[in-house]
Length: 121
Image 1 (tube, rainbow, N blue to C red):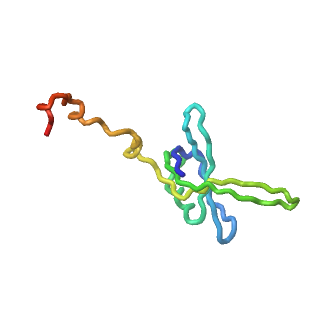
Image 2: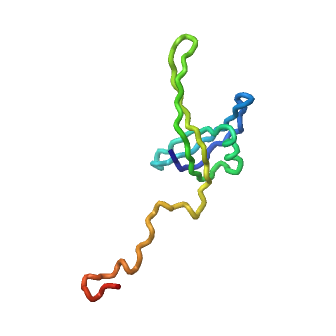
Image 3: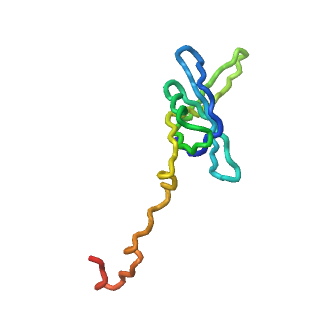
């Protein structure tokens, strides 16, 4: 899955266990700019370093996996947890913004070729 937005929070890397580390960040995702969403992602292991060269306010594209876990607490109640595990975070630059817009129309395509003798070939 992929989402684009602006980094609004960036946290330090946390060592959960000696062999496991994670780093979280929050993305402002504005599919509807009137009602932006604030979505927390996590990076794990060596992916934590991807945030080192990014700053709060940067526009980014985030590739992530949706993860879900089931856990039974000591009282026997089953609980479910979800996380958004990012695996690639790329800063958007001016050259790739607007890349979804269609290319400009070619001038020759606007000409009227309704007559057989006016064909361009």
